[in-house]
Image 1 (cartoon, one colour):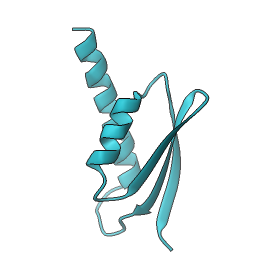
Image 2: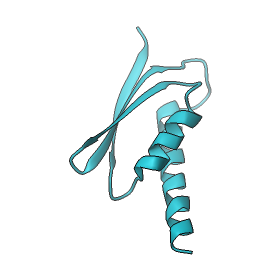
Image 3: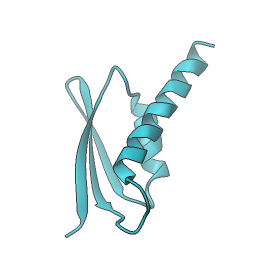
Image 4: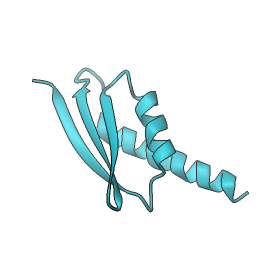
Amino acid sequence: MSAAATVRLHRALYAEAAIRQAAETFTDFAAFAVRADGDHWVVDVRDIARDVDGDVVAEFCNFALAHTALRRKQTHA
């Protein structure tokens, strides 16, 4: 049985492009499916690598949030 998780990221805090960039960046560690659901982006994470140090899902979320902030900073500069 493979490891899996689902995360809900509020659309006011996370940009879709940043979430998709995170999914591409973390493709070696898991498979990601992103969809909109009301005020949230829902990310289904499956086939999470068990042989890595750290929490893949948490690091994915951190990456997506950081890149959302960078994108917003660039558009307001």
